[in-house]
Image (tube, rainbow, N blue to C red; front, side, top):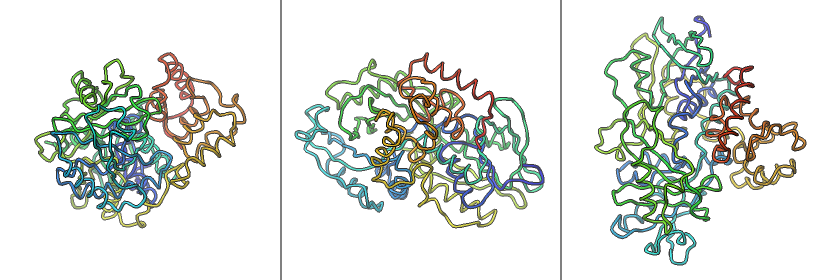
Length: 508
């Protein structure tokens, strides 16, 4: 964009909020540029507990508006992305001495009825002495409540929003850092640095959206030049991934003696995901890593319930991220609001600055709609809200059509192992056919990097989904990092580096 031709809005941040806003805005006809200093979803958005949920425990803090909005979003998001979002049942054992059974029933009654649930099944009571969900647990848990929420592949949700935004005209730039932004002549002059080449250039925009997640205050202070910026509370959440603890497809919701909760969730076929922690964080969000105390806490908390304790040697992987919660002054990190706050800085006659503070992955689409209301107040209305009924890329099939799509893919590509075909449909939905275009046999899949990861998939991810490094592929796009050895990962990185040297970091 030249100085004479500013885009409508420039978005800082390639997490779920930035990409969700970019998609909504592009679909309404706005010209959009989005810049992410690293990879898409490389911050908070890929380090979640991977749930589309109302937040049952938020009812205790009287966050009724947030819970209701989140509950209403579950089935909307499921319909729009049934390949990466699907229903999951959660088992909440009643533990003596903790929250009483009547309180759990009341909370779950509200959970079932305030969010317009239509497709997800209602809560039921379980006899843990006879129900299979009781088998992995200690025998002292005789009763439990089973309720519904949804699972989401969080990093893919971000990438698919970015992909759809790009296909609707947005310009998505990864590995691109915003190093300066100033108001001039009624527009923003924004300096950006290419992380690969170091080249610095300037673009112009009529409106600037700061959706930088944990770095949102840093953008305000260091990039925009505001003083005394303290809007977000950084809260670290860590998870451990252990070898599979149970065969049941349901997940567990465990209460802890300190009033906190953790989940134990089936993960990537062969594993169980356990988390999360909540503790205040100080420092660079990019350097967050699980502490020894957090490992001990998660192992001990899960071992209060599982008959076979969770041990350190069971851990296959850990991850830790920093949530940029809006600082509402709560005394404890776990009590800080998960709601989002949007603010505007629009001095008369000057280009507007809009900021996103807080939020959760479940409500990203509603946050984007709320942000578009503000954007249109400054730039004029272009069209009606549209994302509630618009499938994300690959999600254009019925919510009950996943198995049929897997079968069709297996039929079209009979040389694929059944588990491989299923994984491709889980990640790419109907676009698995696009990934496999021209593939007529095993040889056409190309270089085999390990497990069921082949060159055809890697090339697709580099061309269509902004993947540049092996970490982009292994830990954000596919989670095959749980299966590949360090040598295989290094070989993949070398391949991508060579292939990427001939292409930029900006997808078409």
